[in-house]
Length: 315
Ligand code: TXA
Ligand code: MG
Image (cartoon, rainbow, N blue to C red):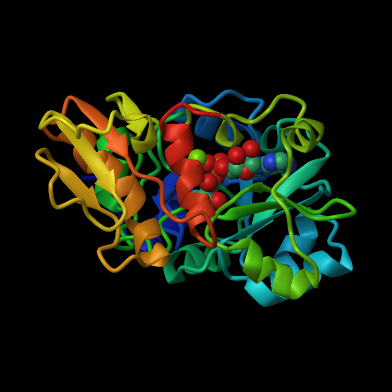
């Protein structure tokens, strides 16, 4: 594997080259957000359509203020949750390449909570555009090995171990009333505690209003494994065949085929760290088709169910 040190990554990033970097959520495919050619390379390596905007990673709130107009509430949220799994969508300022935001007047910014990502941001002095380090539409990588599976030696990787959170950041649109565009590693309950009111998921219409073309990361059939995936509720009651790979929440003792258990004790935080790896493991194993069980739909369960729903191609 093409593993590099943080020092080597700093040199690459400063030269406008790409690296795969660890964050607390998932690994990112990172490059200097100010350079149009670098950002174009991110899109082409990912085979990502150019209408799907990228998140800009920054070293601190003070850095973020260079690239976006923060409202008082946005500042409060950043103070409470950065570094951490929260992306704030705010009016953009000049400085980053237009391609980063796909021409939108808003930009998603976040400060990642990982020592390697923070060192790379601080020492390079570059704001880093970084989508998840997977090919477009495929499973997000939560380890260096998972990045390598998708990009081989195309992209040098800084290995930061397995990701602590395991699902991507919560994307929050900071309109008059904040709305969650993508549930993620920070729960609606945590947001509500700072906002002082419940924070709702954006409706389909609200999403359509924030993005001219609905971003694929927010749509059905994203994060898909190669094998067909169905949700357990669609399966007849007589049980599953041994050719089925099962993603279960707390374990199904009678399942005759391969199985990945997200959390035997029923802990949603543990389940979040395992969901992408579980899909990947079953996808690479002997199962012919995959089936997943919903997890409880609160807290981090919203993000997990969102990723499962879209991996299964449901809206
Ligand atoms: O945890 C994460 O957020 C990871 C790590 C690497 O930081 N990154 C990540 O990036 O998941 P990506 O590109 O795979 O997903 C970014 C999501 C997309 O669904 C995109 O549509 C949304 O954020 N987004 C970015 N900028 C936006 C904007 N200006 N308006 C609305 N949505 C935006
Ligand atoms: Mg992604």
